[in-house]
Image (cartoon, rainbow, N blue to C red; front, side, top):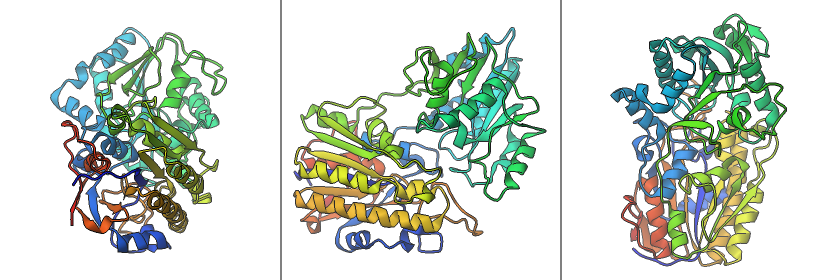
Length: 501
């Protein structure tokens, strides 16, 4: 099939997976008349969005980063998690030049500070990488500590106690990712993390487990929200020390990296900034700082957006703050700046502590942006992301997530109407699951992503002429090119999802 629709819209419902109906399935339980009507009328299928289908290890849940990267690339790229695991397995990890620089910097004196998320969730960091670094430091007889960030988001909300015994490095500080891994310039959070890590300013605790138990004594406290604590007296980052930030996903590691290494940093006042610091990030955080060493540099990607630009087409990318990076940076293969003919609109996310307090988020504003762009008839292609199912799903509040789905339903309905009014076509899908599986089998809250497949619909005035096959997220870009009437580059190993009925 080769069609030629204008515009072609990719509508991504973040965290919208397929699962049997049940008390934990907010997707099925929510009042979503527009999505229900779409399911009745338009051809649909299911896409793999986890594990090897998005370049992750088998059985690892997908996430927004790899989901959008794979959709935009048109082929499966093995992600940093797999690359680092392979390096550990083949022995090249211990020979890595950036790691060796950090080791050499503190060999005679000083401390190597390991820093990152305690998780086996496979989204931002992996416990195996932390322990491999600890073993490297021990083998080189280098003094080292770890500053742990607890997960509770891509892992069960109270899972840290089970993981702590497996940590091989001495723990200097411990805190929830809420503080250390903010990505929305809530600098007061980053400052709390900085104070504990750099200046050893936080309440002390006897052991990491004691700190976690104290947190759990409060029914409202879980791993993600645990306030920064020093283990014993902590361990300041001193002049001449080295830091290895072992998170492999960039977006939630940038603010703390800027605080450490940016000369003209203005997020908050640094009372003391360590000098002569050797700072290593496991992957390229794209922070624009030449003084940051990268252990596993990014592999170049030529994404769909580049193909469209080369063809002289106009494109539009929009989302609210929480998912803006995904429809721009990640969808565009890790490129920050727009391609020629690419316009972007960022809709601010609401400033609330957690999104169960405002499940509607900014879906209405995002719908305003995308429908205006479609109605302008300026663009050949548009991508829009609705963040609600994922971001509210992460809170574990099923009722709030049902409200999030209802708000998304209205926004999607408006987007579909605008697309059809413009004689365009839409691919409606998701980047990974979440909101459809919010309870574990034992009935406890599940705040993490899922490994479930995601829906894909083809929406157009003549959609009944086509059928949609099952596939993977790598098939999205070739399908969009097919709808635009453009040839699919050889590097895109995905195939169009559409064929004549």
